[in-house]
Length: 267
Ligand SMILES: Cc1cc2nc3c(=O)[nH]c(=O)nc-3n(C[C@H](O)[C@H](O)[C@H](O)COP(=O)(O)OP(=O)(O)OC[C@H]3O[C@@H](n4cnc5c(N)ncnc54)[C@H](O)[C@@H]3O)c2cc1C
Image (tube, rainbow, N blue to C red; front, side, top):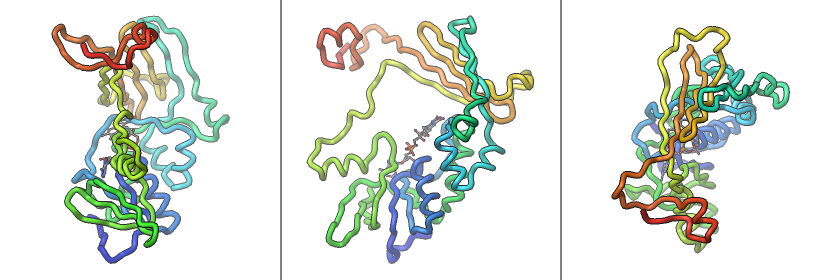
C-alpha cells in the first residue's frame, strides 16, 4: 500500500506502473530521489505471456541489480528456427550476441519480470487506483500538478508519462501545446493476435533448450519463444476474414493506397 502523504514533495511523479514506469522508479530509487508512481489499476495482477529482454535493456537492468534474478527466472535465447510453411528455411544464431553487444537475449515470463520491478521499486511508492486525467505545469511554483479521475491533485517537480500507447499524459501535454488530441497512435492493421504460455513441454531435449521457432505461413505467422522449465511463450498473428455484411472501418488495400485513396475505408 502506498505510504504517500500530501505533505511530502515528490521529485519525480511517474504516470503508469508498467514496465517503463517501474523501471524509471527503480532508477529514481538508485539515485536517491523521492518518487511516486500513479497507476490506474486497482492491483498489479499477472497479465501477459512472455517478454524479450534484449542486450540494450539488460545493460540497464544489470546496473539496477536485476540480472541475477533474470538469469534465474528467464531463459537465454540461443537460436531461432525459421520455417516457411513446413520447410525449415533458416536458423538465426544468438550465441554471438553477448560477444557483440555485451549481453545475451533473455526470455522471461512478463509477470515475473513486472512483479520484480514492482517489488524492488517498493509498493509504498506506487499509488494504485490513481487514474491521471490532467497534467498542469506551473512554471512560477516550479511544480507540475496531476489531477486524478476522483478529483485528487498531486504535485511533483517533474512528471513522466509512462502510461502506455493511449497515454493520457501525452494527450494533456498536446492539449496545452495547442495540438489536436492525438488519437492516431493505434491503427487497425487488419490482423488479429493471440498469445499464451505453455505448460512444461517434457518431450523437449537439451538440444531444444533456448531454441525458438518462427513459422511463416501464407496467411499467418506463429512464433514460439523458449522460457524457463521447458515452457514456451507463443504469439500467433493472422489477417482477419471479414464476415459478409460486416460494416466497419479498416485499412485499404495497397492498390487503393497507391491510387491516392485515404488510408481507411468503410466496408
Ligand atoms: C496488460 C499488458 C500485457 C502485455 N503482455 C505482453 C506480453 O505478453 N509480451 C510482450 O512482449 N509484451 C506485452 N505487453 C507489452 C509490453 O509489456 C509493453 O508494451 C512494454 O513493456 C511497454 O511498457 P510501458 O511501460 O511503456 O507501457 P504499458 O505496459 O502499456 O504500461 C502502461 C501503464 O500505465 C497505466 N496507465 C495507463 N493510463 C493511465 C492513466 N491515465 N493514469 C494512470 N495509469 C495509467 C496502465 O494501466 C499500465 O499499467 C503487455 C502490455 C500490457 C499493458
